[in-house]
Image (cartoon, rainbow, N blue to C red; front, side):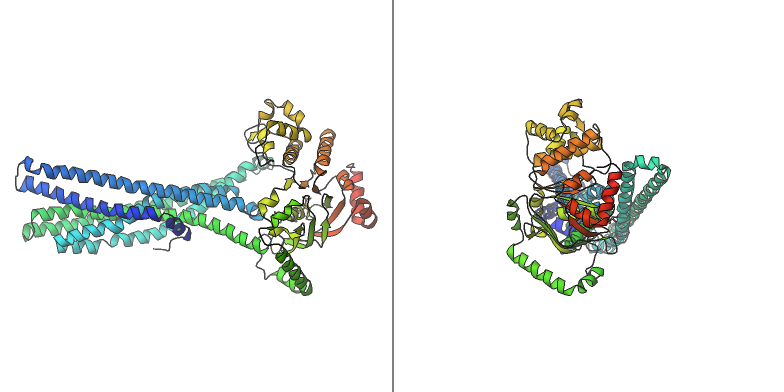
Length: 624
Ligand SMILES: Nc1ncnc2c1ncn2[C@@H]1O[C@H](COP(=O)(O)OP(=O)(O)OP(=O)(O)O)[C@@H](O)[C@H]1O
């Protein structure tokens, strides 16, 4: 049998008490099975062979009923323990998956299909059920009861014991052969299911675009292809399951037949066996094989489950690797540290030594995990020190030199599309980790801060804020991260210019918005994000200014709200409007991943031709 997955070992070791109980109950079950056969053989012998009166077997029949009841209770008990083990293992597994997904870095969260991840978190975890609810109890029973029956048979009649001993291994051997095949097929099935779920969800989310671009039919074919792949993988497993059952039944019937023939010969031809012994053995033999056969069936579902657990394990390992990579500062976790980055750093040896020296000093100054104490000085000073970042080894590289922002400064990041503005914003937010250099907050590396403590001070207003299915008020309240009163929500909404929007809603602040509720326009969504920020009162606001033109009225409301919010915060804006740019304390001009220059509007206008050109273009476009 293949080695168990380490996740299964981990989950099983948490269930030690239940396993011991299962072992104990299985032993008692074995004794009940043997006892039941002994009592039944005795009753039949007395009634039919010795022709004894019924009154003389009343005690035996009463005991038989009692043993049968105990046997039923013990079987039920084993099933219950199995279900309990499955429930707690699934809870643990799902918890692990959700924790990993929740703590994944931004690049790894964006990687892969959402539907595939959902399928692993829900379906694969559910499929793991039978490993604990069926496979483990049956395996435990198979490890104890058949041995007990064999001992009884050997003491009664050596030949029958030998036949059972010789034929029994065929069942586990067959199980292993089939099981190995099933596990591979099961892994294939889950890969197919994840692909199918991913394709389906992607198609649903992009349905409008697919229709507009006439790609709906192709996508339909794609869904059909992946659903057929899933069907075929499932059918393969079912085919193996049916063959498995047929083969097991055949082996069992043949083995029982051989033992019965041998008993008949000894009883009738050689007359070396009493009816009582022969009948008792004949009662025990089917129990013996049926246990092994049930184990075979459970083994099949156990292997299917292991394939599913393997999928969960892969997902957990993937996230672990990425975390390890991002902790090492490998950017998106794709670099191996010996590639181009290594070469660049070799060429820059002196600089690197200097940096290492500085990093060591910073390390000594602040022990990891204690740096959040320095988040008291808010808004903080932020410094970028030779920050470099890359999504993947051969992809776009961002390299900003050194620049620092004082507490409460208003920073605008400008540049052409694709120049790295959002990437820089994410690096400052700590959503991406630099592959070289560091982002310092209040003089300490951002990497040393407790992530949750840092995020408590940050609000990030993207161009497409997430609106979840809930009321308008709930969607604002999420910004606070604590219980807030209706008055506070209304105040935040008013500050963000949302009061009029709320007044127009059918049920005001209690109107359902988001999925399945009322939709919101782009401008309304951004104002909702601003309202969240008003509630949160962060020390740093990262703002991705809308590129699409808003109407003048909305634009004014937004500007007023942002100016109000900016009073007590460091605000870093990916700016597209000349108004924002001109009012910034400092403008960072990005070009193809490099920070070309920074300064105030008039300074850049005087010394950076690219900036002057951008301003000129914007003026012509009427953005000013
Ligand atoms: N998750 C990602 N994986 C790989 N490359 C990425 C990823 N996100 C962005 N990029 C690439 O990084 C470069 C910079 O992207 P970024 O979004 O920072 O630019 P930007 O200046 O904000 O652009 P825009 O103004 O159009 O939003 C682009 O070439 C983009 O293709």
